[in-house]
Amino acid sequence: MATLTHQESATAEQLVVTGGARKTFITIIVAGVVVLILGLLASMLGWGAAEHGEAAGHLGASAGHGAGASVHEEGSPVWLKRLLVSLWHSNVFFLGVSTIGTVFMAINYVAYAGWSVLVKRISEALSAWIIPGAVIMLVVFLIGRHDIFHWTHEGIMDKGNPNYDSIIAGKSGFLNLPFYLIRTIVYLAIWAYFSYKLRQLSLAEDQLGGTVWFHKSINASALFLVLYAVSSSMSAWDWVMSVDTHWFSTMFGWYVFASWWVSGIAAIALTAIFLKQAGYLKALTSNHLHDLGKLMFGFSIFWTYVWFAQFMLIWYANLPEEAVYFNQRLGGFEGHYTGLFFFNIVINFVFPFLGLMTRDAKRQMIIMKIVCIAILLGHWSDFYLMLMPATLKGESGFLIEIGVAAIFLGAFLMLFTRRLASASLIPVHHPFLDESVHHTT
Image (cartoon, rainbow, N blue to C red; front, side, top):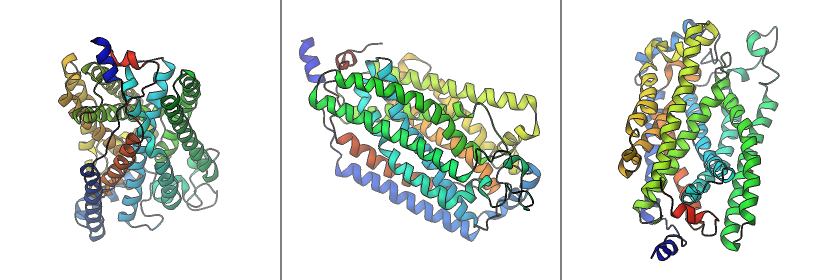
């Protein structure tokens, strides 16, 4: 009887994306477009501008010559800046989560982990956004770099120019346009290549069998993880930290990675739950959910550890060039971001910590689903808090930003499910499939 159960649970399962699912994705995109248009109109017509006008004007006193100190230096209207920054914000978040699918798969390969084989195809499919995300990132940077990155302004590194900034000029060896573009292309190329490579090896294993593909995947994963360890930290400096050009933190690479990582695990777990509830992944049990829940629980604590270590050291030293980062987010711009600052801690630490504390909670689909959604929303707002104060000061909002995020979500889900449906949800010839089917915790 045990053998029969194993044979049934280990057979190929093909996802069918129904017309209803596609309509849902399109509805999300359409809703995003509507919200985006409303947000753009609100910004253009100045709805609610009065309450934020003084906050935006308070910039000079709050940030001095900090990153993006002149909101209107390049003459772009606020609505356009918000659109460009929102595109950058959501794309950085979705691109990071997409790449975590490959990172998760690679870690399980080099660790010879068997429990995760049943969710392996989900992590493979997450990388479907890397290529579109790479294109969007390059286009948005080339079009909107002056609105996002203060260090790209003309003359800011040239002595004698009215815009000259000696601190930013001191970083010109790293923060210059050619080198920045080269680095960004290298990061994206590494992530895209290894995601493609591991996917192809996995499909070849399905079609041809044997362990040769498994061992090739281990070698590719080991190399990828070394390159990702460097490129993920550097991408965090380039894409997020350099927005606050004067400010820096030696822990920032870890901080951004922790946010991406726990969001990626939440995306994998949430997808596994939806597939299970739709009748797929028959061999998936509460034991697998328990392990995914432990990862979310543990790395929510790790994110909080990095967050607190960074905050505590800056608060204790109380150096103006460091404290400006938290001054802007905690009370700056007439408290524009203060509520979000505390919400960020609650939704990204308190909620998952309490929600996943018990063993039973990690094994319940409804609790896991709620926590996964909360983590994804929470870390999207975490990136919002990283990017908005330095770029838009007190002029940020939520309509444009939520509209853009909804468009990205709908497009991401379309690509993600298409890749999920392009191969069996069960990697039938993976050498550790039997271990995963019979996994217990």
